[in-house]
Structures are given as C-alpha cells and as structure tokens.
Image 1 (tube, one colour):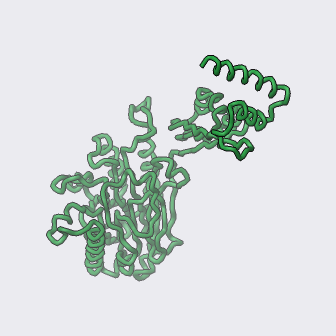
Image 2 (cartoon, rainbow, N blue to C red):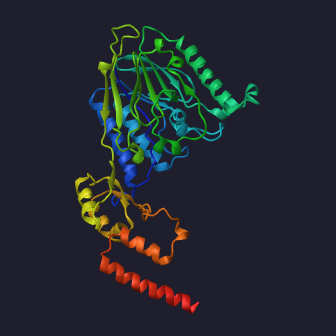
Length: 415
C-alpha cells in the first residue's frame, strides 16, 4: 500500500506576489497551486492508494471562493483517479465560533465520494485499491470548546494547556484500543509536538492563540504504522520506528524558510508484515516540489564607493525568479554614494524585491591621546589634538590652527 502525506498548503498566502497578467490571480497563489498540482500528478503517476492531508488548507478560516474552487478542483482530480483523500481540519480551517462550519466541511455536506473530513478526533476506515486503511484523525484542538467546561474555571493558562494535552492523549489511546491490528493504521494529527522544530519567523504570525504540545509518548506509537503530522512548516522526522514525520509546508512563506526544502512524503506499507513492521524509514521518501525561492543578498562593502561590490554580489546570487531582499551594512560615506536605482535594475530578473535595507555604521569616536577631560581643553588645544589624530601635515596643521585662532578671537571680541 502506497500513501502520500502532505500538510500546510495555506492557499491564500499572497505576500510578495503581484497580479498575473494572464489570469488576474496573484502570482503567489499560482505558486501554491503549482506545488499542489505537482503533488496531484505524483500521486496519480506513482499509483498512490490514499492521500492523507494533515491540515491547514487555507491561510484564512474564511477562504475566498476562488481559493475554495482551486482546492476542490485538485481534490476531485485525486478522487476521479480512484485515490481516496483524508482531509484533517487544522487551526487555519477552524471557525472562530464553534457553531460555524469549518473550511473543509463542504465535502461532508455534499457527500463527496471518497473524501473523508477529520473534524473530530476519531477513527475512519478508508477503502483503498490495496485494501482497508484505518486512519485516526486528531484535528487542531478547539481550545474555546474545552474551556466551556466547569472544571477549567479558575485555572491558569499553563494548567489548561497541560489538561488539554492530557485529554487529547487519553482520546488517542481510547481510539487506538479500537483498532484492528490485522489492518494498517495511520495516525494523522495537526498538532504541536514538544520536540519539533518551529520556523518562528514564518509561523508565529500564522498561529492563532495558545495551544497544547504533545509528547511522543502521548501518540500511542505501539498502535500505528505511521504518524502523519501537520502544523509546523519544516519537514522533520521525530521518530523512526514507527516513522513520525512532519511533512512541512508546500511553499515558502517568508525569509524564515529561505533554506528549507518544500514538498510531501511518499511511503510504502508492507501489508504482509505485522503491525509495527509495516513501514520502515527505507520506505519513506521526501519528495521536493518546485517552490519559489527566497534569496537574501547581504553585503558589507569595503571600498568608499559601495556600488561595484554590491552589484558584483547581486550578479553572483540566484535572484532570477526569486523573492529577494538586499541587506547592506554601510558607512555614512558609502550610504551617500549608494545608487538604489542601479540596484533595482540589477534585480530586474527577480520575481519581487521585498526590501533594500541600509544599516548605517557609525564609527566609534576615537580618543585624542590625552588624559585631560574635554572640558579642560581650550578649543585650540582640542583642535590641535584632532589634527594630530588625523595625521594632518605640519604645515597644513599650522595654517588651520592660525585661521581657527583668528575665528575664535574674533568671536570673543564680538562677544
């Protein structure tokens, strides 16, 4: 049995985009859809038996109709190819009120064949070409729903987080006890794990509210052949036996993910083996997709004219088609000679120039080689020390001091 695991599509993230002249859609929306298309094509060409989506279809809990249409179009392509799909509800798919529908509920309402929506923690048995597959779904916990319980009143937020995590773990264990050990079983959860990597710059602004964190021991790993996680944007392996993986997101969101590969996971289950031996890491493959590159060009020029070094650094960077930021560390003299228009011309092949940031270094004041305090020096003495520090030629120093004394004395007489 071959499965495909992916997560965190976040359709609707359009920062650093521009209108596409042919479709009128944001070029960033097209980036996200193109990655989804690669995934669908791979699922069909590789003969995948089921697709597990671990949550966060959209950026917004109230996605635009265009975003919903594009997501549904690709899900239906999978179903029409005979591939059942499990859609887990993530935090970005949840409404802000428990009485409202979630962003994926339309598939359940319409009774779309072979599309299963995991809106509540529970067991779903999916019928695949290779046989039945047990999927235990753990959607993003609705903290507001849990907080309505009387026993949570007057508790601190940390105490509530711990109780929520314990409650989720108990639910997972209870459902795990219902599994048929003769059939393959997958746990999919949109959740934060205590030992996972968080891409803080890109994820903090996309994560809403507080949330509990689970430990690996909370997942009842003895009951599952594979654990498909969503929520964190970096691909990562948390456990190898059984494999516990975050698929990561399918497109980069910002410069915090500049060096991350983006894609999805393909895995093979050997149905002839017993539970606990059906999936090994040899049968788990991360498949990258074509993701828009984010490129940082960082330059600290040495010459007084910064432009040759800045332009040479840009020429060496892979900026074509990328979202680019330029970070410059300059002296005040270099900043005065900076030609930003020439920099933008050099970046003409970039998809977007996110920013050109100039950090001006102010040199530390040099000591003038005297133990006397500044207020103890006359203006002429201070000026003489300054000329000594700047290594002014003696004849030039004498001439400047003569002029300075005339000005100082003239000012005193006028006073």
